[in-house]
Figure (cartoon, helix red, strand yellow):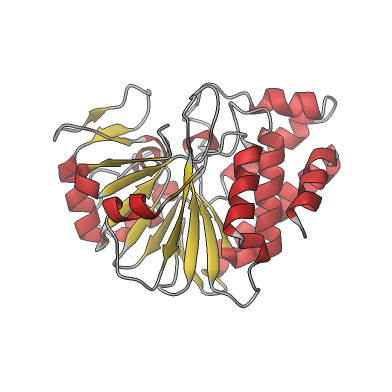
Length: 306
């Protein structure tokens, strides 16, 4: 399907079509997790392992910015890639809220998931978090009510089910960890990340994966966001060392496309443009999965800015 066709379908979808799309996507995600595999992807709990072959596109926060999503898909050529090609796309979460095209962005990414299955990895952001971790603004229900005045509650309920079905992290062994927010404190193994959703809320691993931010000081302290932590470079060294990876790729914070923390061990990626952030540029990544692991400094130089 061409991007122009998908754009028209997203704009014209009925509440029933949208709800059915979400339902089928939830079923697909649950099946992936229960099988522990999707194509060449290994899946352990909420952690997806990308193979060290091929390439992946990485997309940060979108927050209802359909125009930037379309630009990324067109410029990267992902939809035009061969079915046999080892090409993946990882979305780091925060698809809706703040942007008036939130419904259309969900329609797009879920359509991509069903079209390309194992080549599309949809991660959970804090705006897709569990109900006990409330986010503000959460104007997705408003955008749904504008689009589907009589059935917005039904469509919103289906999206809440989707949120609980999304994976929350991606790993390329010995190279990269990808997630939305930050590194959880106190983990002892990769299983603590993989099964963070099952430990929640007794352990705060999932909360920190979705909400935490890197800080400028060595100390860790509660986040002013009201959830998550500000984690220092010591946590970054320890957790990345435990997991045997070089670089954390995350989103969650607005920036001019990319920013670096902790001597390049943490790369923040932001793929949305416009208000309320008013960043002048956004970015996405294309990573050669077969190449040696790169630092944040190297990845920033190769990022695609727009």
